[in-house]
Length: 323
View 1 (cartoon, helix red, strand yellow):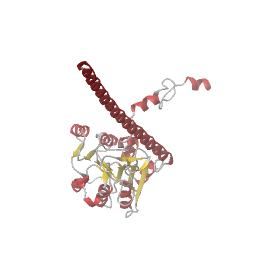
View 2 (tube, rainbow, N blue to C red):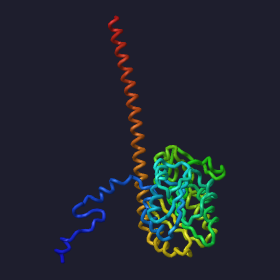
View 3 (cartoon, rainbow, N blue to C red):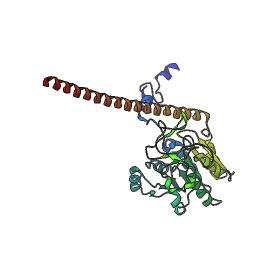
């Protein structure tokens, strides 16, 4: 028996006996920070297969790769709403006839969107927008239609702190004081220059927590008046939220699919460790940049001193020659 096991082919999961470096090689190919909804690809495909939606409406399309995932899993059509689509998303929409791109803010075009049983919210990660999107989706759903809604970024840093791509599209009363030049860090309770800084692309509310602040707070407030809805959280890659009605024809299947992942203690620890390590990387990068700027400033000061000394030396020589 031992000889048979030793001589039989081994399953290749991340590596194998013949390819022991498979795991580190794959790790090197991954980005430093996993941040995209497509990282939940296997779970998303399971949800699509369970609910069998004809149409998926996605708010916030990234590169369009997630839309391709919905189509590959069985959705007949995808409508993607994005006010500032990437070049990749625009190209995918032009090449895929089943993918329709709506270039607009979600809150402006929601009334004109077709009915759908499967929604994805991954656009503006702030309370006002997410709550309005959820209310619009749930209010338009009929008693027979029970939509499934996926939301990204329900955990840190946007779970309890608003993020704004364009706060000017919101009412002034819906926007918290915010900053563009600093960002949240696991290592601090305040925004830091060494945190997740948007570099002008997005801003974070200066304070976290409290009322009307953050994606998960919006979800909680919407569901408070709808006790029939279930809210699962997959605590990985900034958090995936799934809202659904257990009484839907596919409700039990979805519940069983999400059960191992919903608020998993192991996944929670891994996510906390992941964002903690990344915050430390950002801190080291910031410190390196700070010291580099300091050394460059000192080098410029030394160059200026050297230039002055050379000038003084030349002046002294000229004076000595003159004498």
